[in-house]
Image (cartoon, rainbow, N blue to C red; front, side):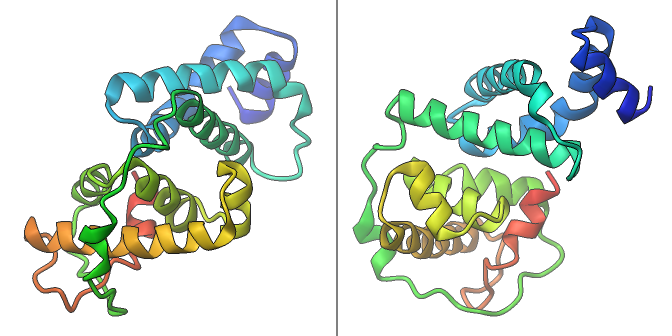
Length: 194
């Protein structure tokens, strides 16, 4: 079934088309949810809630951009709303841990596996992880992130800087980065592939 046929069927509330849409996009969207969630069960809940929104809002898709991008935005917003609703975004953050680290701007070796990077990202405190995901992986600006999370733009910037520093430390400790002179700036592209 083509994407156009799937979309047409979904607009007509056809269960087979909805199943096709879900089967086509759910693996990638589960990866998105997994980066925000505390565990796999939370990620699956976010995914289900997100797809309910996709099916109820499918009539608002305007075919100007890619259907996958539209679905991804809904899934990301669902993840953020879930974190806010469950107050998980407000978990305490160990700022002292990140302040002594310097972020370096060199390249990450291509041998790093995206799955390992995602697992290390998931080790970050939820606030850091959320901002890192939104900025480095999803491509939102700090202004957009501030609006989504109802925080100051400067808070988004500082959380991102601290998240990069903490992630660098984790990657070095886990021997994924061979030395602290390597950088985490390319990690967004690697994790986006997951």
